[in-house]
Length: 94
Image (cartoon, rainbow, N blue to C red; front, side):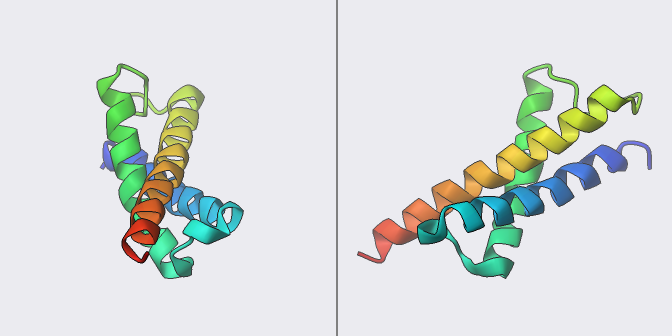
């Protein structure tokens, strides 16, 4: 259970990051549901990538640094993946 908390934080942060990115980049937005789903996926991927790079994302002790790392990794990952998926979708629709 202890190892699920950082993942849950990353997924929720990813959904928020995807929706924030969608509201800032309206031309790449996929709608609220699409932004949330892509953000959740990006949050999970972003958190895992930060973990592979050695940046603490909550594996082990849950201190404030690892919680912030999970939030940042998830949020940024969700926003970045939304931008990529939105750009690809826009390019395919031309």
